Length: 291
Image (tube, rainbow, N blue to C red; front, top):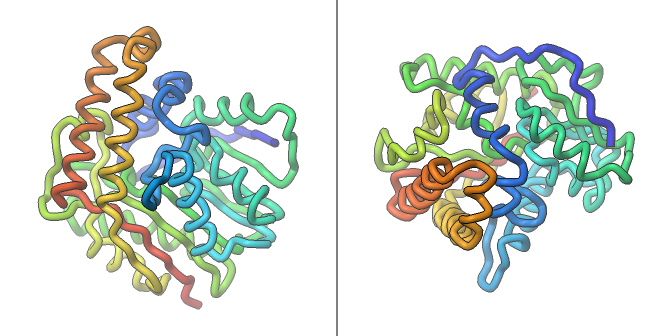
């Protein structure tokens, strides 16, 4: 697996790079205690009787299918985390070249260490922002899971948020072949404007979108062809993460300290409650590039 981080990071939207890295660079070993074996850190797609890993793999399958990524020549993931979707795209969907973008140095390093024997020119991960990513050739499919939550700042007005999201969709439009598909997953505000403070404490400088803002921002560049709200799936995912963290609480405290573990337990409990009550929604959107 080729892991390359050559350029200085550039981002002008939402949370600062420092705020994002404060969260995702906390400790790979800490996250490994309570995520599943694939190290997938976004809402799973559940069916009755699933383990967390089975539900996460179903989610990976879903988004790659929605993006029409099977046998794609070139595939892009914006916010590639610890690499599970990229590896799945190559191994299970026969993608010929999969490009990942992450702002987390720790995630970048984790991928490099996790796949030392799988050096594969089909996969490349850069520590880079989508704003500063300029591929030599366009992509056939794009997926982004759990990144859009960081694209606006709490101080932004609704108009400023839409303008920032529009820039994101314009860049994706430019990077995608005509008629290509993008699959997007994001938490949004649901029945209220603000969620539990425990969530905001874990994700400083980030502000959730609303569905209407996403629709307005993407309207000139993408057609929405499928939409589903799986907020209960995120409630279940959060509960499962919390159960796993509670079971390994002492080990977690050794890695990051009691206070941080306490904060994450509050955050996971609050996230589960917010999705159960509809304060937050979890949308999965399938979008097709307009000419």
